[in-house]
Structure formats: structure tokens, C-alpha cells
Length: 253
Ligand code: G
Ligand code: G
Ligand code: G
Ligand code: MN
Ligand code: NA
Image 1 (cartoon, rainbow, N blue to C red):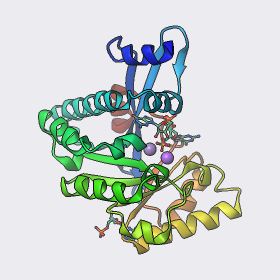
Image 2 (image 1 turned 90 degrees about the vertical axis):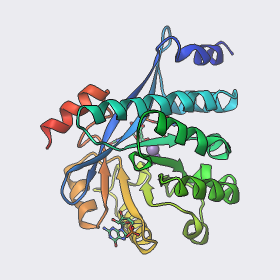
Image 3 (image 1 turned 30 degrees about the vertical axis):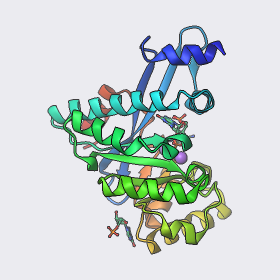
Image 4 (image 1 turned 45 degrees about the vertical axis):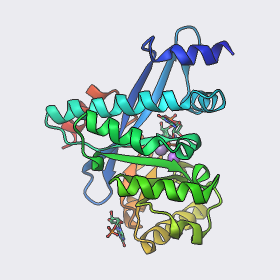
């Protein structure tokens, strides 16, 4: 319970921060955007992983505020990068409750507008399980976000239970293959079969396919050969604070 109170104070106490991980064009190796990931440095407990505090925020009714802080923080960063001449786009993660929150599209629009950003600068990552929690509602919500000009990725794809029919109806532009299928791709024939057919599935539905958890050069080469569109992983970079991300981008351009 005190952890819930700590979380409520975390933003004000400046214990929250965002880190950014490069996403690269698989064909050219060029930086095409970043994924924004939240971090919480607790004053006595140290680093608390986002899986844990996001779930805590969802259960304790604090996710709307936390997501609001995250959106504002990422949009402020994109605006600063704009001013410095870096026209980057960022993927942000939304939780199941965010997806069910009917005020979300308006809050995202307001946040973009107040930072002078066009909607194509934000990409939304929503897990397969968050969508499948209430597929009909999620589908309407995603359609609203799509009409507002935001692009949407199905995150952790392959770990949930979406049917082909459900997937086909969703207004999404990207499939993001879960890292559990990518981490040992260069050793596992089973994973290679799964990844190969997921890339085919995505392309047959007109979607770009992203692989996260790319840690080795052999996995990178395999994914590029399979036609995967976008790559993300420790092979290229860990998630970095904003200033380091720019240094990384300058060293790799
Ligand atoms: O960053 P890793 O860096 O440990 O992230 C672990 C998990 O936490 C990922 O599944 C990621 O989607 C989730 N996560 C990270 N940042 C955020 C965030 O800002 N909002 C939500 N909802 N989830 C996040
Ligand atoms: O053409 P359209 O806007 O529907 O494509 C959406 C996204 O899906 C684009 O980013 C495009 O790169 C990707 N895409 C669709 N089909 C394919 C395909 O067959 N191969 C590759 N590499 N990308 C595809
Ligand atoms: O939202 P999502 O689950 O997609 O968040 C991405 C997660 O994957 C974050 O926790 C991020 O730190 C992690 N990640 C990114 N690249 C790699 C990688 O190459 N290997 C591993 N093990 N984790 C990664
Ligand atoms: Mn993600
Ligand atoms: Na993921």
C-alpha cells in the first residue's frame, strides 16, 4: 500500500524518467524511430521494473495519471528534438486500461497539439492481450485513434490468442513479434518457423512487421532475409536517456 502512495508521488518527486530505444529499418539499418520506455527509480527500493509498477498502477487506479505523465514527457521530448532538428517519431506503450479509457484519444490529441506535434510522430504499442480483453471495444477505440492520424502496433504479438479474423478487422499498421520468439532465433528451428510465418501473415494483411529482442548479428541477418521490416534490440542499443539516444544516432548515421 505504501508502494501505491510512493507511485502516486513518483512523478512529483522526479523519480520517473523515460528512456528511448532505437528502431531501425531492417534493410538499410537507418534509424526510423524510437520506443519510449518508462523507468522508476524508487528512493529506497531502487529500480522497479515497469512490468511491476504498471500493473500496480492499473490495479490501484493510477494508470490514467501515469500514462498522462508519460505522454506529456514523450511529447515534450519530441518537441525538444524538433527544435534541435531531429524529426524523430516515438512508439509509446499503452496498457489494457488505457485502451478501455474513452478519454484517451482526446488526451493524446491535446498532448500532441500542446507540443506542436502532428499525430504521425506518435505510434501506439498495444499488447495483443490488452486488445483481446475486449476486442470489440478495443477495435472501436483503435479506429478512433487511427482516424486521428496515429499509427498502431500490436505489441508482444504471438503471446496472446487473437484469431486471424480478429486481427484482420483491427485498424492496426504494425505487428511487433514478441521477443521470446526472437531472442534464440539463431538457435531454434521452431522459433524460425514461427517468425517466418508471422512475417508472412503480417505482410499478407498489409502490415509492417517489427522484431524486438534482436541481440545477435546472426538473428539480424536472418530477420532481414525473412523480410522483417523493422528491428529493435540490444545488438543495436539498449534503451537510452534522450541525450545519449541522440549521440547514438549521430554515431550511427
Ligand atoms: O523496458 P522494459 O524496458 O523492461 O519494459 C518492460 C515492459 O514494460 C514492456 O512490456 C513495456 O511495454 C512496459 N512498459 C514500459 N514503459 C511503459 C509505459 O510507459 N507504459 C506502459 N503501459 N507500459 C510500459
Ligand atoms: O502499403 P501499406 O500502407 O498498406 O503498407 C503498410 C505497411 O506495411 C508499410 O509500412 C509497408 O512497408 C508494410 N508492408 C506491407 N506489405 C509489405 C510487404 O509485402 N513487404 C514489406 N517489406 N512490407 C510490407
Ligand atoms: O513493450 P515491450 O514488451 O515491447 O518492451 C520492450 C522490452 O524489451 C523492454 O523491456 C526492453 O528493455 C526489452 N528489450 C529490448 N531489446 C531487447 C533485447 O535485445 N533483449 C532483451 N532481452 N530485451 C530487450
Ligand atoms: Mn512495446
Ligand atoms: Na513487446
